[in-house]
Length: 208
Image (cartoon, rainbow, N blue to C red; front, top):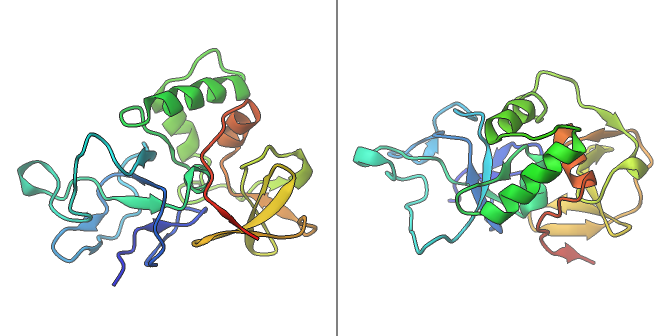
């Protein structure tokens, strides 16, 4: 039985068999005895996206990985970095330092900031991401968005890559028509600005 640890673009967690290119966390969310969600969907504002392999370390997913045999952080998985950014995560400064610095630079440039720290990015993203924001989804014009900015149109998560519109699924992307219905941003506005300023996330594969 798969754990409920696969995130969709809105940040909601699902129990599906599909694997992901990246892992990440929002703090401690699980009970290591039952390996089930403990109720909360985040315990920190620092939502990060990490590489699945780092320095040969191994973890018991949703097990006792913390100090003194505690839960440790709850491993979540993302189809790709595009999905993780849509859900409101940012690159980890420990295991993905180069990507984190590139994102930090683009975040500052895209949002007209002289500089920005990780906590400042976390504070801003927490107020914008679908799962933690109290604001209504932002209506957007699909043609005005940079590649990799995820939107919702007609109830579907969609994204553009090099002129081609794709529908997101847990198993990959499927080519689709340009959205014509009203569209709403899934990716947080500050991250959309970072994408517009040149940050290039890692994509998963696209079905044809």
